[in-house]
Image 1: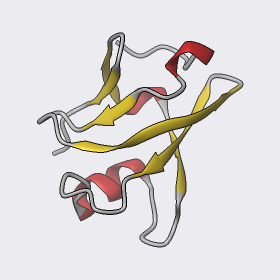
Image 2: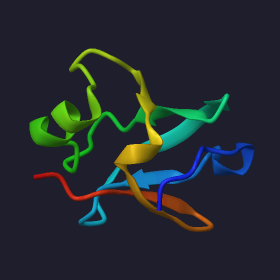
Image 3: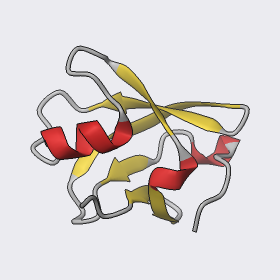
Length: 82
């Protein structure tokens, strides 16, 4: 269900396909979202970081619409990683 990010996506939780919270959408600009990661997130595994292209030391990270499975009123759920 890929779509461009919108202003009303700001402040939504970002969760893995399994429902583990990994952060919050901090900003939306030109259809792209920046995520502020939770520091103590157990859901943000190395595999998920690799899929998203996020480094270990980054605080804010871009989330691309092709990584999103679904959107609802409060959260953005990521696709399953292989």
